[in-house]
Image 1 (tube, rainbow, N blue to C red):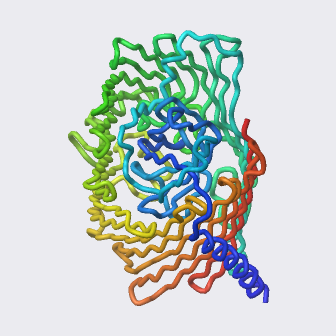
Image 2 (image 1 turned 90 degrees about the vertical axis):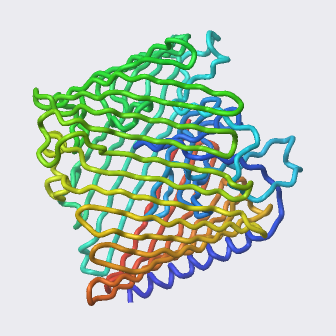
Image 3 (image 1 turned 135 degrees about the vertical axis):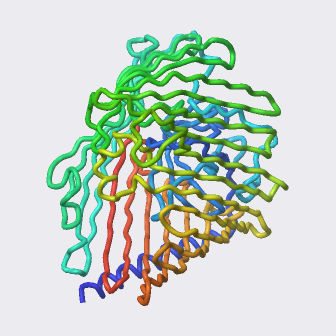
Length: 550
């Protein structure tokens, strides 16, 4: 009876969300959108190639889409004239952010409110934006006097709760309280302080082996103080994630960077890697990374390159020497490519491999063959690093993953069609060891509102499931409805999967409804509910949160 009650209530809520979204397919008002793309993804968030020059500002909320399919909502944390750092707010279950994903913001200015807007498009602007991925300060403001102690940031509270019908074996709850922000111009100086931390508490029947179970857990992701000199050189101390080379991961130490000439910088990181399980301070793994940054741009191109050499010790012995790099190139407004890579050298401590190893490589390419047709593709290489610090990781011991490696080759295309329709196709081939070669595909069709409720959409997707032990298919329908200039938005989705595992067959279905409310300019709340059923087990998941931005 109780499960039946859950289903009835949830069906009513879901039907209401779908009804609201269907109304968004009609035209009523006009808005203008800023369309950008993700350039770099890091643990703290991601960078896009739009900023103050496009009238973006900290606190603004946009949506992330891939092939017209909603992936996440995101909020701007920091802005420079040509780039912005964002953090994900609400993500679709099973989706992760990628370089090249489209990020859109609705901008309304008094001079433009009467103009007729067009459907969201994937085409680039005629004049290319100059993207600076490292949030370089506005060069026009150098030397100007600014007020003291300029502070901005965000504090949030999230509560997750899950209950199931299998005697509560999957019941759990997680409470999170976090804050992130910065104080610029400390006492009127060129120094600033940045922080990002979170306090969490876990309870339930499926989290007994996780850190923080039935006790408070504190995670310090960033706490650093830095000075940006008038010539844009940098000095930084504390815990931070190097934006110049995010592959390094979190670091407790110092960074120095000197501008040698226009477009050329030389820098170095020196410090210790935190504990890999809980990010607690540790002196087991000291490292040094000298690096070189090159940047060149004009109306017809933009080239950025950061390369460095990582050398680390572990418990007093040489553990890793690696070449790490990030490069990006934009030609005109139609062509863009980027690459991040890590090449490891054998320093005598590898147990499962020998010689030079390409441990990480993520390459992405995008080309607009026509204004409304975008072709994209990429290569992803992953291999666990065969060093003592990694082998001593508890997770690698449990998963026995040190011998795994994989290559993924993929190609996709997006086409803007008539009536606000957008079609996206993607196919990938995965070669992994141990394991079989996999061929994966997905197709999605989206319908966007032309004028009424800009960014409202309805997306239908189908895809296949393939692995060594199972085969199957899946699909989902996602509806998104923003109201009142995105101050209130609703998202409803229905997903299903059919999986064949040996001689057994399984069906999984999931209903999700989310509401986001921008209560004031600084206060925001969200509520999400999900009902899932599969393998004769039903579960209800609820997450609620409140955040304050200053």
